[in-house]
Image 1: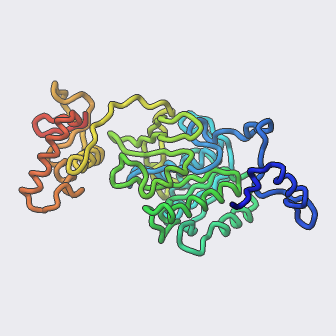
Image 2: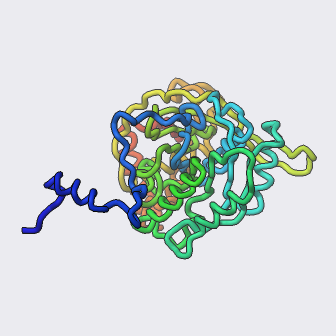
Image 3: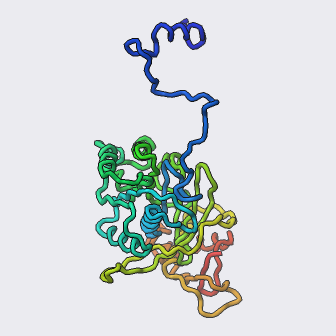
Amino acid sequence: MAHNPISDPDDWRRRLERGHGKVNGKAHKPRFELIPLVEIEPDEAPEFRIERLLPHCGLAAIYGPPSCGKTFLAIHMGLCLAGGLSFFGCATGRCAVVYIAAEAGKGIKKRIAIARDHLGIRAAPFYLITAAPNLGYRTPHDCNALIESITAANIAMPVGVVIIDTVARVTAGTDENKAGEFGVFIGNADAIARAFGALVVGVHHSGKDESRGMRGSNVFNGATDCEWSLHKEDGMHVATLHKMRDGEDDIEFSFRLERRELSNGQTTCVVVEQSDVASASPPKPKRPSLKGAALIAWHALIEALDEVGTVPPAASNHVPGNTRTVTVEQWRDYAKRRGISASDEPRALNAAFQRALEKLIENKMVGIWNRDVWRV
């Protein structure tokens, strides 16, 4: 039987005394430092970049479906951090911000310039990269080159936040559903965060079933220290803090996107207009689990209400006050676009939609009167 030196402490000490743990007879620092219990103290660094909403370092994600305002919110957040401005009523720790606009194209400069004017800041440590570095599975990686480029800029204030918009564009050639491949991005994001003692914020997409969170492998969710999800509801953009590794979660804030013009008056763009302060979201009744046509119809109704819904002009004893509605026909059109039926034959489509409608009424998730439909 092979001798295990770890089971014999005296033998282990003798091995060390004979020169193990030395290079050319000199002691050297081990790769993995062991910190004794009596020396363990909390880190002195602040816990948050944004009070309650964004941790000081690590990895965070902002995700949601298309057109929910992810990029606008990320720009607003970055400018508030660089300018030391309050963010939805929460204090920020001023720091340099690097924004990697890998997806937004030429329009990103206009968005940032107008948002900057709207917030009234000019000389803030906010820096833009318009190229898309490769931080995914495909080789060679650009992680080291990115770190070197940021370091070479000699930014006077420490870089505290690096925003990557979007994760998909910096991971081209990566299968998001394979943990081994998507894990390369996690490793590169961690390397960037460690290089600057910063927080890396990835802007990402939600999956087809928005209730299941971010698109792709759950390795991303497992690695994040913080996650915000975005959705549109009754004409508002709502952000919810779903995860805070070392703090309170289930915090919600909302905003509008309002059109503003550049100071020269020659171009316009929408900016974030804060609607409230971040607060604990009210408890929501648990929704029944949906699948198939009923789930497609539910998402179609939410989309239709947001895009074409209106508040009926006259109060009714049947339709709740100040509630957006759509017609059954509008709802069915949106459900058809989302693929509620595998067949384009009207009879099959109507049958699938009717079954889904009845399921949602049975679960008390929608209200209907005459031809008007609304969320309950």
